[in-house]
Length: 154
Image (cartoon, rainbow, N blue to C red; front, top):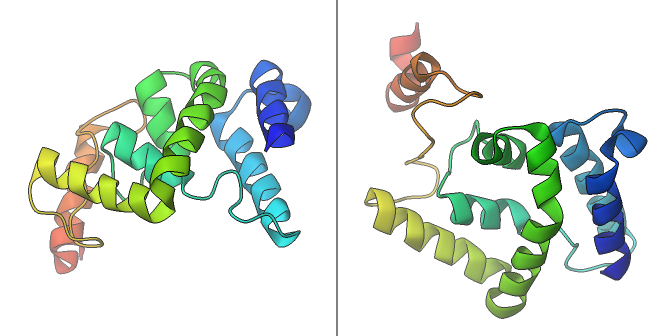
C-alpha cells in the first residue's frame, strides 16, 4: 500500500504530470485504473476498494449521478482542493476499512443515511444536495421527478 500512498501524494502535488491537468475526474479515473491493475495482479482488496462507499458515508450523499469526483468537488469547492484532500481522505478511509471492512463501511453508510434522511433501501431512495456548482436545483428537481415517476419525463 506504501507505493499507492506515495503515488497518491505525488499526484496530489503535481496532477498535471500524471493526467495533463488539474481535474478531479481525470485524477480519480487514473487512480481507479491503477487500482484495477493492482487487483488484476493479485492485490486484494485494492487500495480503493470500498472508497466510493466510504465517501458516500462520510458526506451523506448517495445518488446515481454523484460519483466520488462530484461529491469531492461539491464539498471542497474546486478541483485543486479536492485533489489536495485525497491523501488525507485515503488515509482515513484505510483506517476505517481496517476496522470495519468493506461490508462494514457499506452497512455503516446505509445506517447513517437512514438516520439522516429516514428509511433507506438500496436502489430506491437516493440523497444528493439540492443544489451545487455541479448540479443546479432545477436539474435536481427534474432528476428526482423522473426517478420517482419515469413516465413523467415523456
